[in-house]
Length: 332
Image (cartoon, rainbow, N blue to C red; front, side):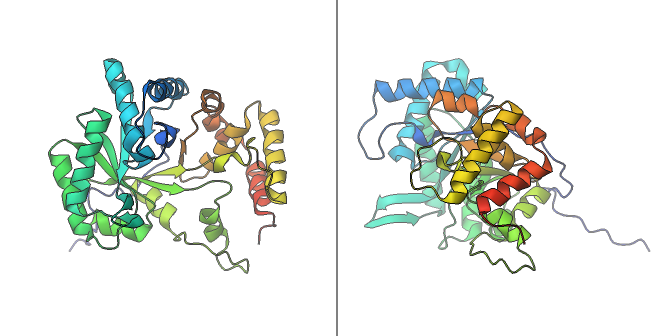
């Protein structure tokens, strides 16, 4: 009698090698103000310049959310696409839904009900002026929605050709598992805040069986789960708002100032920019993180373009030197 062989579902790969990494452009800064003030030609022109700069820097995935600039980030991007019909084939459109801002008397709440997901997707399609969202992410977990209900809405949107791939944002491994159980296609992305400043994803790993307790909401095993199942990890705010790469930070801590100095030294050593050092540090992690770059400065977009090369060039000692400096504390 032959031994039983247990296999994972076909939609969840179990032997995933390291993949090629890429920078993602985050469109949160496009579209003008965060209120309902209409956008105009100035905002569309800015979006055009930024999109071209991002493409020139090798970024082809453009990350949106229905809430960014009260929908205007998607709308101005849609105008850019409409003005150049050939551009659609060059870009991968990613957007998110699930967060509600300033509605029903609440500053913030979440809604991943089937009806809400469909409605938000249809609205995003209209603003983006596209027939299909290439990747749809669920922006935040909604404790009131059954994963089966949300998955049913995602399946229907995929079946209708309105959505290609699906993924999540700000979710831990158990939440991915619960949702994946009801999806015939694999989750493809998990977008999380990861950076040299937001280090809890590293601290939970190095703190095992140690005495340097770190208060963190980051669920251990999340990155490992993503790597094992082929879920791409995208990092939002990977530049930590520029604290290590030239932003004016008069209230910076001693550790932040020391780390900014070290970043500059490494940039000189490797013949690159401070931005590429900060992103390269993140991309060197074996999870193969894709940083989401959100600056609207074409110069700063260009400064990020060398990050993948820097990730390869950084030595283990340099990587750890940046970590220890940012921590302001020796490793356990």
